[in-house]
Image (cartoon, rainbow, N blue to C red; front, side, top):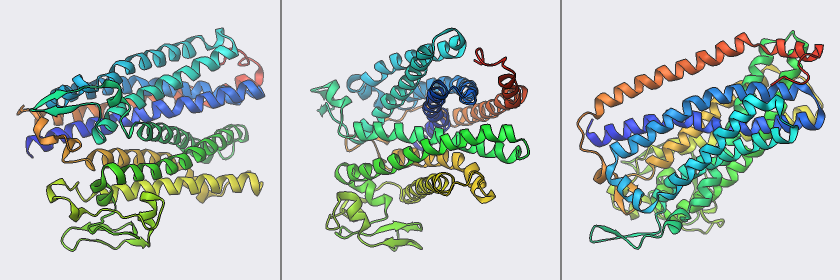
Length: 451
């Protein structure tokens, strides 16, 4: 491997690991808030117990998201010094504001965890709302740097020097709102479907315990409702993202669909893989005219093909597989949530058949996988640029010769951290089974101080 590939692999591994915890750190607070609101409205202590238990999990995940996010920030400076020089002069605002967003999240998370039984219901709801606000703002602000990389604005380079810097124009770059909304709604979707997976797994495990089954069924239906709403919003936002690519990064859209020749009435290729030699998508299912409609809301929209660009500008062609994986998983999650709603609410059947339950179990991991696919697609599809059409990735990489060793060490650290998180969560919830909390609630001992 050369230094460029090693640097990209190291940073990609860091972000691939961090994004798991960052995404759940945004999605779970919404589920906690919904459970808290339902408890305050219905006085059903099952929802209070959900909020408490999900908060414990959120605290553990936050404990890993913070150091991995710090590592990512340090690696940006060490691995990509030329890039950070531009960011420091043009795009420092998101990093500066993110500090305050994180402060809000951490402060009110502490209040909710340690003082929930000593503050009023309104203050509990306010605390969780501010945790959600802080977490979402952190994700949006950091993602805005990525949006800037794809649609740079607010500066120009003259004779190798940065000139005419407008920080707010850079901040509100053309893809800011689409990228910000996409990272938020997809995180809410993922948090909901992770709860769905856990609830379904527990329902299968405790089929003979009616009380525990009832508790997890409530959690399942709540997660399906939230997951269904945000999976649909994610799909709608994905449509807007495709239109943004069509306008600002046409070669990325062409690579995503393996389109080599510019054409109107362009087909949408589902599945298969891109064959560079024959310039076609092999074994794909083509939907006539659909890509043109996706790109411009008209079947007559002309979609620019890869052959209109120099080959050195082409993104890696495997991004087609990543794009397809993301879309197919999103479609599956929409279908699953709708099918669950129809089965339970319209057909009035309280018990889901086993195939349904198994589908619910895999929904959360699939949602996380789609996040990984989306992140890799977004970054890899921008290559060979670190800032699109302004700064090439190869121009800003570090000259260090120790990247290979760092890659091995950090990968080992992430494996250890991942195993540690799973063991801590397993240990805590094994020591504090939901059966005990439900018994306390039934006996009246958990009616006030369940937090």
